[in-house]
Length: 239
Image (cartoon, rainbow, N blue to C red; front, side, top):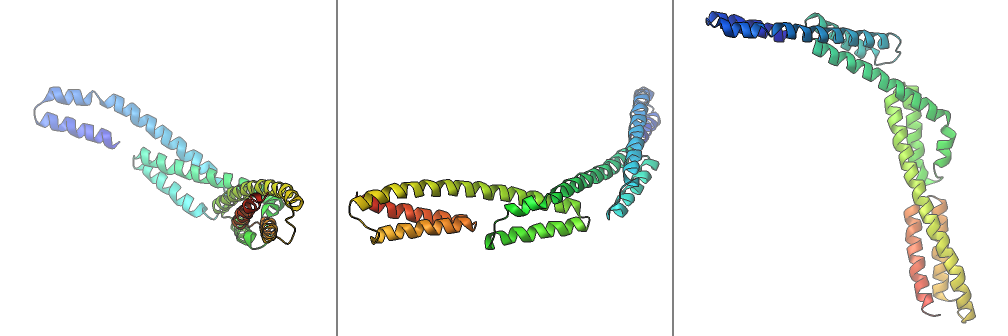
């Protein structure tokens, strides 16, 4: 609409400047501009109706803000600003659909909350994840679906990463345990008994690695495995 007004003003100015040819050229653009405006107004009305339909069956604490945005969209349409009306209307529709999708995702996840809890390690290493899971539940209870969905998504990613590291550490521990059993037999046959200080150190480091892994302390487990491997290297040189 503003574009049409500008076109008419330009045509008027051209006539005032006694340039009818230029004025005619400007005016000849009006039909195509009218088609563009009509198409835009039609799209704006459709977007607004769609947003109103979505909002009418929507139950959320944010409905007041969404209704205000719909009122603004309606005013923009009435004042001949279809682009703004479209932007506001489509924004409302996106917000509603995003929150609805988040609600579905959260409710599905919380129906299987036991499986999430089972993935959280016991002890101090899992206390922070347990706390964040409780916070996500509270957000869901308060209808803060997007916040709850984001919290659960991050929690799931971190637990995936944790369990991947657990498996890597377990494989390393099993390998070193197997290597140690073989080395221990060779040491015994060579006269290096259980009282050997490096044997005692190796057994202690492997036990510490096992304990740390069971408690979910992956960094401590890896550190103990490194110490065990270094201690075993000393013993390998003996046989």
